[in-house]
Length: 434
Image 1 (cartoon, rainbow, N blue to C red):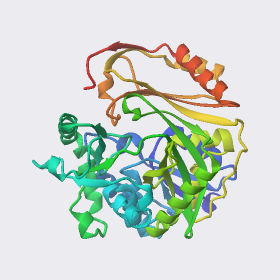
Image 2 (image 1 turned 135 degrees about the horizontal axis):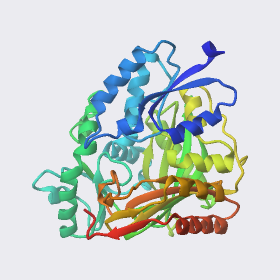
Image 3 (image 1 turned 180 degrees about the vertical axis):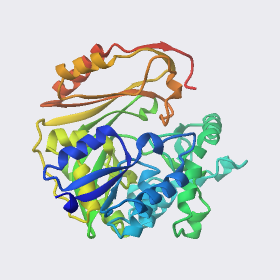
Image 4 (image 1 turned 90 degrees about the horizontal axis):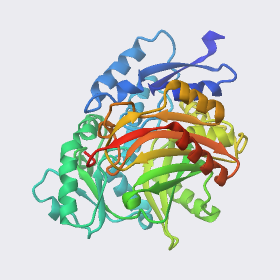
């Protein structure tokens, strides 16, 4: 039996997601191997992409056995390195260029403008280190400005005037290299058109505001050229400019006709860029005027949604990721889980603070007994400043996430409030988000 099991390497593993993946393997079909831990992937002021890529190559070469699949559920640098790691083993994978046509924000908008121009905002590229950055922007205020490559809204700013633009540019200059320099390392392996090659990872994208109305994420995959969407998750925002995620809720309550139009749009785009044999998620807005706008496309499953699918459909969608990596057409269930509705709640605060108290392991275990359907992840510990949390959006601090399932939205929201009240977190406010 051991010799027939498939060896699957998880690039950027963590115990929470590994446990979900192990629960899928009821027939003992594969063996999971960690190819770097998540903490090693995200280490340092800049992601150690070259060391990770070369080190992963060496680990795979030295493995005594077959390399049958390489997977990952994190954003950069995992998502962009996967095609490079798979290529020597002729494993099922999207091409690096098709991945970058999603993850390089400027290149992605250029390709989208060719095939789905009615569903994207006006945009332009901006060099934040140029003296004439204002003159490079062809949009009227207000607009969003963000790095060509980042994650979790890192260094994304809504700017309404020259003063806010100057502030945003300064913040971007101070922090853009965290993603920009490592992203440039990956770009050297791709065939880039001239118009894209000069817009490297330390540039920004400015674009017209589309973040009005309701937001949702399509989770899907492409297998042998066919695009499939198996779930749609609502993204509820809160806070200043409604730029911070409050919760992800599944299944979506957006009307079916709107969902079908979104599916048609993303199908057209993914076929255009020849993205194949990989998972994706695509974020859309649906406005009160019935307009649909595509925010971005990611070339991975959303790990944040995995417990939601497990609670509602019966399996985490790691299943889709693994089956695609093995060259198989995914077979994903629908509505076979324990709950009718599920959510990931992101507990946020909007002022810098020192953490004075958090629940200990015993208290968290007691909460799990009281709410067995919950999964709680704390991001803070006593004595730390919230401003030391990595990769936060520009306006808030995420101090914990709580996954929950329920039979109704009213029950879901009440469970969340009850857990918040029992966690006994104490923060001592400081001034400013610095």
